[in-house]
Image (cartoon, rainbow, N blue to C red):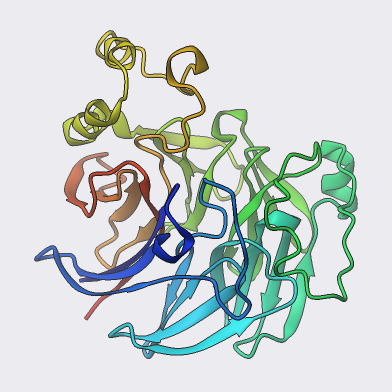
Length: 343
């Protein structure tokens, strides 16, 4: 089984801010890798977090690997030779991407938009939660001030996403013929056409990735809570919560990357911190066991990404950790996108 994953390196110079990697999962051998840097257009970015750095969501078909960068989808062949760039004036801080037939939905996170484009970058559809009557009324949102006719690709760099109405739309997936959209700040999943609030779970605020599994259930990474959640596809009710700190290998990574003795003490006494206490840790920009990256394999297991850049293979039904691969031991190196290809 071949696994493609992207990384973001927090606090790194932009030109060393992340990669796209091809991995033989069975042998754990890296077969190819290439840096992902936003160019055409380039931009100045003083944000020390992820921001414009590295690779984001990944899609794979028989011929190509599609990986998102800050404002573009970069197309590579399966050996990671660059082929071409797909971009759009409303591609702003792309996070995850998803197939809709032969078209692609892109999460344009900084402007809270889901943009559907064809493989030439032509607009086919878009959805704006801050303008949709259902979500705007339910969450008391106000529209973003944006000129949708101009090129916005570099306009929001360094602006920050601090507005009260910012929902941090960062992922989507198709459920049959209807898109499901993840609103990170709200812990919500919205089903479109017509607009319905399917999941509204405060526990997953700050979440990443959404996946409709082969059994129809919906999986979401609880990024801050360091868990994988499973939801009913019909009711949106949480059916299962897999705590990643239950696995000894993950706990070892956590302890190795805690920068203070107080953090280790809290963990060993059964009190892992949901957020780092600023009294001890200050403004830390790279949390260990930051959960991001999710895909289902051809053997119906699930790959989950964590930091420092590692990938877990989990059996959802039993909750067992079947395998694990660590690419980097520095907690600043984070997995972002995950996809697999069965040879």
